[in-house]
Length: 268
Image (cartoon, rainbow, N blue to C red; front, side, top):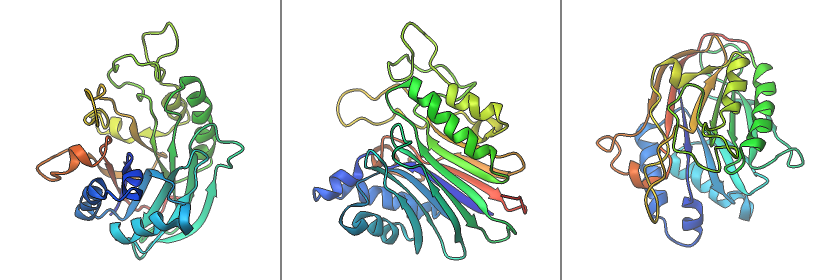
């Protein structure tokens, strides 16, 4: 079995650079407790600076010997890290001149027990504009349609098709519309991709449980995993138990998601 974990790390990098490592240490505890084979993260703010100093610290603190960093157009960097026994075959990034906001990174990994490379794509969609997210969803759709065996993990900043309607918000609802825009997920579903959480009847929200000041935002499942058909998903979890992870409500404003697959010889 191979486990993938995806987590939006909030603003821990800013605090860390300012000399406050409390939030960072909580994140390290959670990751090391679950020890996913592959870890994908967003909001690695400015991890590319100083010869990628914070990225290199993340590899060491989280416990991974290798990984790839994508310097986002917005400096809201994203990264993928993996354990020994997994090898990078290919990497592709969204060029900054094409990115409408944070962008995406796509890596093909040689996994143990999988004859051909497995693709992991990580993305972070626009946090403010439903219209731009529609275009970003089309970028992802095209790339995932070209993938025989793979997984897309992302902070979609929008609800997935079929999820409960969240509280209206300007970042999700187009002017005059009461129903939030779900186009990015609809495009992926129409392309044949599988919403992993929905396929396992687990639509628990991943965001809306933490706020530095004031009330927390309304809960919504914006951290999503989409698999190509044929990927053998054997488990999906939202890591939301404070009994397992006492730090989970204050380590980030997002909760991690974890997907376990059985390598099945799928083709890239």
